[in-house]
Image (cartoon, rainbow, N blue to C red; front, top):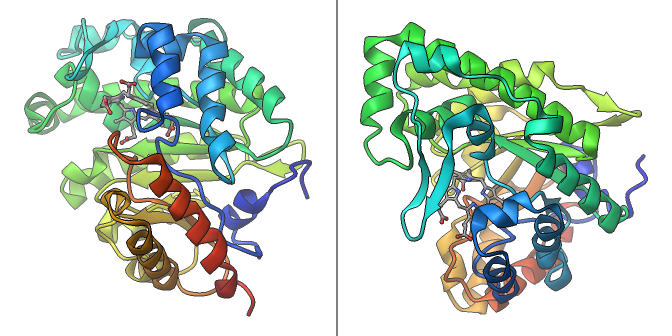
Amino acid sequence: MTNLKNDLLLRALLRLPVERTPVWMMRQAGRYLPEYRQTRAKAGSFMKLCCTPELACEVTLQPLRRYAFDAAILFSDILTVPDAMGLGLYFVEGEGPKFSYPVRDAQAIKKLAIPDPESDLRYVTDAIRLIVGELNGQVPLIGFSGSPWTIATYMVEGGSSKEFANIKSLLFDEPELLHQLLDKNAQAITEYLKAQIAAGVQIVMIFDTWGGVLAPDKYREFSLPYMQQIIQALPHEVNGQVIPKILFTKGAGPLLADMALSGCDALGVDWMTSLTDARTYVQDKVALQGNLDPSVLYARPEIIKQEVSKVLADYGNGPGHVFNLGHGIHPGIDPEHVAAMVEAVHELSPQHHNH
Ligand code: CP3
């Protein structure tokens, strides 16, 4: 059905039969790998790494040289879009991302331009073309963006946040203004993901890391509809090959039921919801991706294997499961422990598919 040598992930995302459960890992290219730290040091900064296509390509491929993962994920960041909208992204060592020009009032929102991805984010599409060439069909490449809401939290707060004071004030006091910002973000992300697909990504994932800080009615008003708007504007297929769309809201819980109706093909599930419950919420309408607690990887390999087996059993039998962590891998994890996780999925998952 594809020209990929390994299309397990594509099949699982479309809930087609597979011989074993495919596996990849959020933040699989990152600081837990010594070779990543080396390339990052050579680049001088995280942003330099993102903005130099050859280096972004190199770190995207690093985890695949070590582990039998079933996908590559583009190395970039969700905050490149607001950076291209003129907010001035920079990273302070140990403090995370910051914006020079946060967006707080009507004037700032009006001023935001929708970036042209092939010029303003050219370094991303160039990286994709390089990666797809290097992968040569070995595994699919996942492209991604942040959700309109999650990106808005960084744009309005000016960086990471614990209380979301500014954006929640905006949400309650001036909801129309926030809707204008979210609509601009949705337009920018749609163009960005269309350009990623045109450049060669075979799957797209939307990261809604902060959707779970919203009350359910607010999530249904300020996050989900904008993700749905994006999904519906993206091509269903390219050259006869369906482009699966994955939504991940951290802390979604029972809202997975609403998300399953968005038109996406699969939902990412964090480790606070069991896959058994998640499957009940989505009623087999979509595939599920997840959800090993990332801190399991601090444990000994035998324990990791046990926990992997529990996640596989929680999903149960049949197609539609993609093994992943419930959120990104922590920087302090021993790379050998990731190998133990991948081996356990390879060894233990076939029994869930031979029915
Ligand atoms: O999964 C992958 O391997 C692809 C790469 C990827 C990165 N960021 C690289 C990165 C992806 C998919 C992201 C998405 C992202 N970025 C999210 C959503 C996913 C999630 O984890 O919830 C968010 C919220 C961001 C914003 C962001 N980027 C923060 C808050 C930080 C700093 C926190 C930290 O971990 O240091 C980043 C930096 C960042 N993005 C790093 C990496 C590998 C660490 C940079 C470094 O090398 O210092």
